[in-house]
Amino acid sequence: MIPAAVDAFCTRKTEPADPERLPFIFRGWRFENSVRPVGSGCFAPVVVCLSHGPRPVETRLPNDTDNIAYATRAEAMRHDQQQAMRWVHDRTGDGQGQF
Image (cartoon, rainbow, N blue to C red; front, side, top):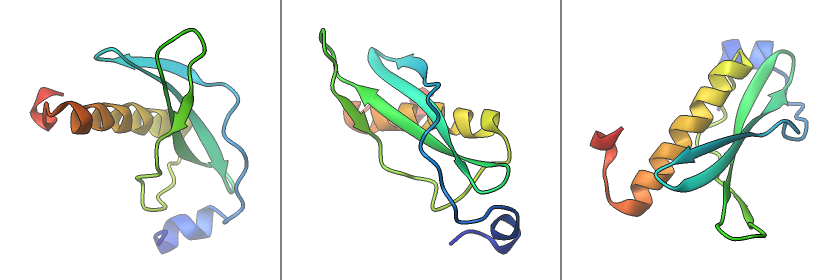
Protein backbone atom coordinates (compact mmCIF):
# COMPACT_ATOMS: atom_id res chain seq x y z
CA MET A 1 0.00 0.00 0.00
CA ILE A 2 1.07 3.55 -0.68
CA PRO A 3 1.51 5.52 2.55
CA ALA A 4 -1.38 7.95 3.10
CA ALA A 5 0.86 11.03 2.72
CA VAL A 6 2.20 9.81 -0.63
CA ASP A 7 -1.25 8.66 -1.76
CA ALA A 8 -2.67 12.10 -1.06
CA PHE A 9 0.09 13.67 -3.16
CA CYS A 10 0.17 11.09 -5.97
CA THR A 11 -2.98 9.87 -7.61
CA ARG A 12 -3.28 6.30 -8.91
CA LYS A 13 -3.13 7.51 -12.52
CA THR A 14 -0.06 6.08 -14.23
CA GLU A 15 1.59 6.82 -17.54
CA PRO A 16 4.00 4.82 -19.73
CA ALA A 17 7.67 4.66 -18.83
CA ASP A 18 9.84 7.63 -19.70
CA PRO A 19 11.05 7.37 -23.31
CA GLU A 20 14.41 8.74 -22.16
CA ARG A 21 16.16 5.58 -20.96
CA LEU A 22 19.66 5.95 -19.59
CA PRO A 23 22.20 3.15 -20.01
CA PHE A 24 23.74 1.61 -16.90
CA ILE A 25 26.38 -1.15 -16.95
CA PHE A 26 27.26 -3.09 -13.81
CA ARG A 27 29.70 -6.02 -13.81
CA GLY A 28 29.14 -6.64 -17.50
CA TRP A 29 25.34 -6.59 -17.30
CA ARG A 30 23.59 -3.94 -19.39
CA PHE A 31 20.52 -2.06 -18.19
CA GLU A 32 18.45 0.89 -19.28
CA ASN A 33 16.92 2.95 -16.50
CA SER A 34 13.96 5.27 -16.72
CA VAL A 35 11.08 6.53 -14.63
CA ARG A 36 7.32 6.39 -15.00
CA PRO A 37 5.25 9.38 -13.86
CA VAL A 38 2.77 8.37 -11.17
CA GLY A 39 0.15 10.97 -10.47
CA SER A 40 1.09 14.56 -9.81
CA GLY A 41 4.81 15.07 -9.39
CA CYS A 42 5.80 11.52 -8.35
CA PHE A 43 7.90 8.96 -10.18
CA ALA A 44 8.26 5.17 -10.16
CA PRO A 45 11.51 3.45 -11.22
CA VAL A 46 11.61 1.27 -14.36
CA VAL A 47 14.60 -1.01 -15.04
CA VAL A 48 15.14 -2.97 -18.26
CA CYS A 49 17.89 -5.60 -18.58
CA LEU A 50 19.36 -5.98 -22.07
CA SER A 51 20.70 -9.31 -23.26
CA HIS A 52 24.02 -9.48 -25.08
CA GLY A 53 24.28 -9.70 -28.83
CA PRO A 54 23.58 -7.61 -31.92
CA ARG A 55 19.80 -7.52 -31.26
CA PRO A 56 19.39 -7.43 -27.48
CA VAL A 57 16.21 -8.74 -25.91
CA GLU A 58 14.69 -6.42 -23.31
CA THR A 59 13.52 -7.87 -20.00
CA ARG A 60 11.80 -5.52 -17.60
CA LEU A 61 12.76 -6.16 -13.97
CA PRO A 62 9.80 -6.62 -11.62
CA ASN A 63 8.66 -3.72 -9.51
CA ASP A 64 10.38 -3.94 -6.12
CA THR A 65 9.19 -0.70 -4.54
CA ASP A 66 5.99 -1.99 -2.88
CA ASN A 67 4.03 0.83 -4.52
CA ILE A 68 6.36 3.54 -3.26
CA ALA A 69 6.66 6.62 -5.44
CA TYR A 70 9.58 9.03 -5.38
CA ALA A 71 9.22 12.80 -5.24
CA THR A 72 11.92 13.44 -7.86
CA ARG A 73 13.15 11.80 -11.05
CA ALA A 74 16.66 11.68 -9.56
CA GLU A 75 15.50 9.63 -6.54
CA ALA A 76 13.66 7.17 -8.80
CA MET A 77 16.69 6.87 -11.11
CA ARG A 78 18.96 6.16 -8.14
CA HIS A 79 16.59 3.40 -7.08
CA ASP A 80 16.86 2.03 -10.66
CA GLN A 81 20.63 1.69 -10.29
CA GLN A 82 20.37 0.07 -6.86
CA GLN A 83 17.76 -2.40 -8.12
CA ALA A 84 19.96 -3.32 -11.10
CA MET A 85 22.95 -3.92 -8.79
CA ARG A 86 20.86 -6.09 -6.43
CA TRP A 87 19.56 -8.05 -9.44
CA VAL A 88 23.13 -8.79 -10.59
CA HIS A 89 24.25 -9.77 -7.08
CA ASP A 90 21.28 -12.14 -6.70
CA ARG A 91 22.27 -13.92 -9.92
CA THR A 92 26.05 -14.03 -9.47
CA GLY A 93 26.20 -15.11 -5.83
CA ASP A 94 28.36 -12.12 -4.89
CA GLY A 95 26.13 -10.98 -2.04
CA GLN A 96 25.36 -7.43 -1.09
CA GLY A 97 28.70 -6.90 0.59
CA GLN A 98 30.18 -6.17 -2.85
CA PHE A 99 28.36 -2.84 -3.44
